[in-house]
Image 1 (spheres, rainbow, N blue to C red):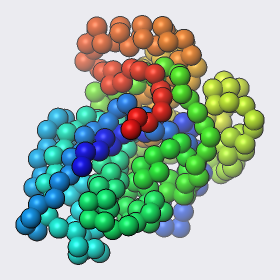
Image 2: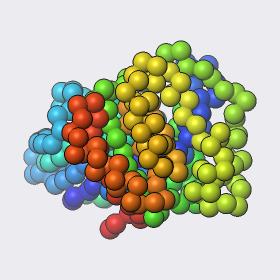
Image 3: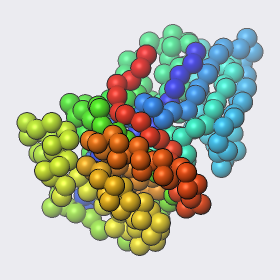
Image 4: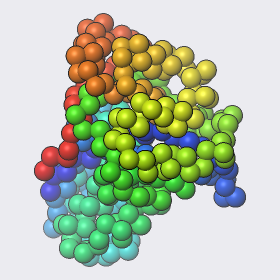
Length: 293
C-alpha cells in the first residue's frame, strides 16, 4: 500500500491562554498542501517483524523514535492481529519547519494499518488513536481544511478554499524548536473566538485574508523573528513580491506566501532558487489544488 503523507500550513495561529496541564489553548486553521509530501509504502510480512527502510532527507532521530514506528507499536499493542510489515519511507518534507510532516507520517501509517489488517476503524476512531503521537496528528486523518482549537486537536472541517492561488514556501536554513517558540510567548485571551467568527462571514477565503489581516496572525512570529531575523527577512520578501498573505507556518521555520498573480509568485521562487541562497531554500512553488487520488 502506497500513501503520500502531505504537509500542512497554519493560516493564522493565535495563542489564547495557558492551560492547567501546562499546554496552551490555540486557535488556527490547518490547511493541507497535497503537493508537498513524503512517500510511505507499507506491505505485510509473513513474520511478526518490522523492516524499516528510509531514504530522502535525513531524519535526526533513531528509527525506533520515528513516529511511523511508534504508531506501529502503539496500534499493534491494541490490535494483536496487526502482523509484520515492511516500511519503505522517503522523506521529502523538511522537519523543524512547522509543516507537520512527522505527524502526517504517523497518521498515514495508522490509515495503512487500518486498511491492511482490516481493523474497520472510522475516521473519528483513527483520529483518537493517533492523538497521543502529536496534537496535529488527528488533522491528517481528515486531511481537509479545518478550524482547530484546544491544543490543535479539536477539529471542525470548514469550507475555506484557497484553490487556484499560487503558493510559494521558503524554509530558511535554521530550524525552530517548539520550546524555543513558546519561550516568552505573549498570550492573547482577547482573541478567543475571533478567528471562528471571521470564518463565519460570507466572504470567500482570499477576501477574508485581504480584509481581515489582523485576525490571521501567527503569534509565534513575535518570539521567533527576533531570534531568527532570517525568517522575518523571507516573510518580508514574500510581502514585497506582492503576496496576498504571507506568514510563518506553525512555530517555523517555513514562511509562505499566497499569490493571486501567479507570475509574481513564480518570479520570486525562480529568483530564490537561482540565487541558491545559503540562508533559505524554496521547498514548494505551485498552484494550490484539490487532493489527487
